[in-house]
Image (cartoon, rainbow, N blue to C red; front, side, top):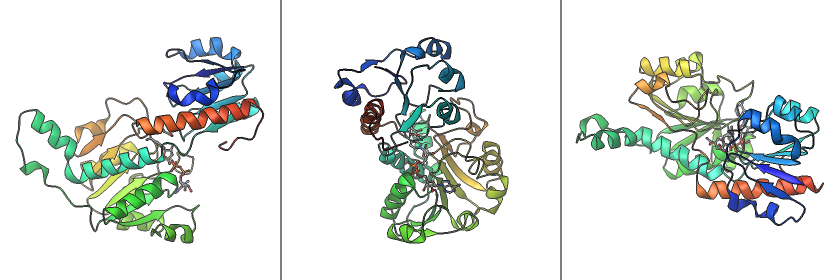
Length: 310
Ligand code: NAD
Ligand code: MLT
């Protein structure tokens, strides 16, 4: 059997595949969609991160494919309906990058509070400017977490360590489970009204698309700070732009965008806007863990054994 590995998935994590005498692993350089379509018919399994789009056209040519593995959480670059129609199993690696994404979220929050990226850039351009960078403390502030799953919970714990009061909105979590984390569940509207910082940690779905839109920003506290290390499109960027322009939003940090890659967002005009190029899972530890997890899932699927993360 042959497995195709794309998108720079950490090779060191692929031992489970390498140990299998019946499985051959191919790791080519970056492929165009046409090149992928040209070779996908040879493969029984494939592993991707987010760059490769496993769309209906690719799947149509995947005549032997039994399983696609996503080395990460979100499977939004894989056409699940087309895969299901072809009987191709889709597995992911949901736990390996939780801490990486939670730690980036905390770094974003601290950067927003203390203007670290802007002060660094100013100093390196030759200006010793203390006046422009008066910050705020996190202690005593209210953090609204939208989506209290793996990453949202890890963020909540870390924020409590910074003496923040954490509230959350997640319609799929019980009050009891939130209480174990020391987090109070509120309605979305109350999250908007009470929070000094708002961070989103949920998948992009029909329900969550533009969850933070013009109306949501109107409801928020004056001077709220916003973080998205989950998925582009949960926050409507044009609405965020207007809310930053009016001063309603005192700062925003995005790791993810409605369209990626994104190198010329109108949001870049604001000094209190921070951006990173989808780095949430980019730690050595997380990349090793997700590669190990997804490789094990692919082996199980190809051997016809039970898989954990479908
Ligand atoms: P998870 O499944 O553990 O948690 C998601 C939570 O969102 C769940 O508790 C669910 O009940 C909740 N939820 C779903 N729909 C909701 C809605 N409409 N309103 C409120 N809550 C809702 O997932 P996770 O591992 O915590 O990942 C969260 C997000 O972060 C995913 O979108 C994932 O793709 C993304 N992510 C991004 C990066 C990055 O590189 N920036 C890295 C890892 C994960
Ligand atoms: C994910 O959903 O796991 C992330 O987007 C991380 C990645 O880019 O691999």
